[in-house]
Image 1: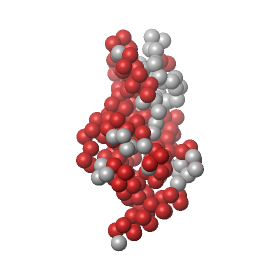
Image 2 (image 1 turned 45 degrees about the vertical axis):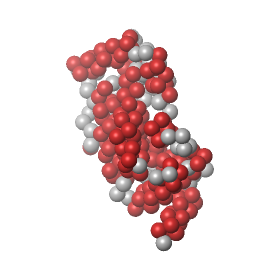
Image 3 (image 1 turned 180 degrees about the horizontal axis):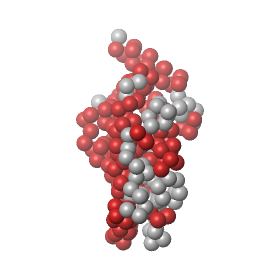
Image 4 (image 1 turned 180 degrees about the vertical axis):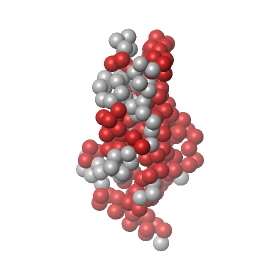
Length: 230
C-alpha cells in the first residue's frame, strides 16, 4: 500500500511539473509572506554598521584566494544542484525529475517573496557604496537586503535536510557557505546574509504547512532517497 501511495504522489508531481524551471509556480509570494514585517530594516548607509561592513568586504577582497573567488563564482547559480558536493555522485537532475521540478518551485518561491522586500528597502550594494569594492561575481544593482542567494540557499538547505536528515549537518554547512560566498564575492554585506538566513528559515516554516507543498515534498523525498539508496 505504501508503495502504491508513493507512486501516486510521484505521478501527481510529474503531472504538475513545469516544462521549464523559469515557469515554476512558487509555493508563496510576498502577499502571503511579507518580509517587511519579519525583518528589521537594513542599516542606513551612513551608519557605523554599514561602514564597518564595507571595511569587512574590502578586507576580504585583499585576502581571498583564487579558490575562494572560484567558489563564489560557482555559487552565483541559484539551484539545488549546488549541494551535489555533499549529496554524492547519484545526485543528478536527469535521475531526479520529480525532485528537480519540486525544487524549481522552491527556488521560485524565494524570488516571489524576497524581490518585493528588496525593492522596498533598496539598500545599495557594496560596490555602489564604495568604488573600492570590486566584485568577482556578476554585478547586480537590485536591492542588497536581504540576500536572495542566502535566502534560497537556507531555504533549500532546510528542505533538503528534512528529506535526508542523515546529512543534515553537512547540508546546512553547505547552505551557510553558499550564503557567505556572496560576501566573499563582494556583492553583499554581512547583515544581508544574516537577514537572508532568517528569511529562508521563515519561508521554509511557512510553506511546509501547506498541503500542496507536503504532497510534492513526499514524492520528491521518496524519489531522492530511492536514487541515493537510502
